[in-house]
Image (cartoon, rainbow, N blue to C red; front, top):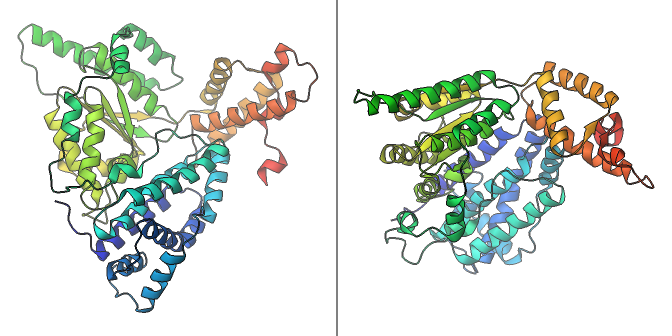
Length: 480
């Protein structure tokens, strides 16, 4: 049965959600802008959620939750009742926050996904206020989804793509009988596969040799390639010992990927899932990628369900948890991330033969994450380190992107790119995005080249393909 959320707990969850997102913002000016505006903005959104639920009668809990954005323990001032009642009655149209434009501008310059991540946090925080009466209604979920969709539409308009599906509020609508058992997750494994799943199963799978060729074709990652091949040899020899009737010591295939963003961690994880399948270690070999927002819910009673649903999708393959360190809040032992970890550990034990988990993130933060729980330490004992790409490797990645997409670099453009990427590597800081920076450079170059070539009367095939130095360089208008 779902517990009743207290105002103090609401404050705690809200504060931790906002603080976690603030830490994701690398730029100090943008981080400060978000911090100044977030509380007032979410208070206004809470009024919209309650209006969507037809909350004509404002209760003390509404006022306490409204007050909880600023205070977890202080009593609500009596004047707040009037503020909430008139605010709910007079709530008009949803408006994006002022800082959302700044987030999108930053994403466009740096190739990050801050704006789309905000939409997920926004959804969870609004659901927190929907749970003021311990029920998330269809009308409340519909309002939250509509608001989130309008924010995502702005991202799409700006050409900002995401690397995972957005969170949907209707996943959290309270069922008619919240005390009844939740059969959804176990039933999912018993249903017959959909026709498209059967079609995927029947497709020929790549051989181990083909997958190793794909691994070798990746730029850089020399040590990671050696570690993957060593792991393959370990699995092979274990199978041979089993066939020979020799004892086989216990071995965990769960992995920790350490390294900065854009170093190929997801790509290698996807290859490893297929390699494990080709060797008979996993029956399916799919990769399910999530981060904290995909596992942790914003209010009492939902994190375990949400995490279990994600794990069900990953059974038979690999669950890849990016920035897994965000599941552990060192300052808050009661954070819902710990509940997600407990569900994860239980499933790793229950599905030892058909689930492999890979956790990834910054080296120092991941070390703290693994050592925060004895269960994690015992299951994750293999570490792959993904080094930053140097200038030459970044240029090779750019050349590969050009070749794959039918573009060529003029000799002058190639020389400029080599020097620029070398400088980018030598002067890298905490915002260095590795291959993501190269992808951002390439996409902007393609856009500038399109503007340039569109002005030509009858461009040749070569002109349609060639990138010039001016296509690669940012103009003064873009930097201001």
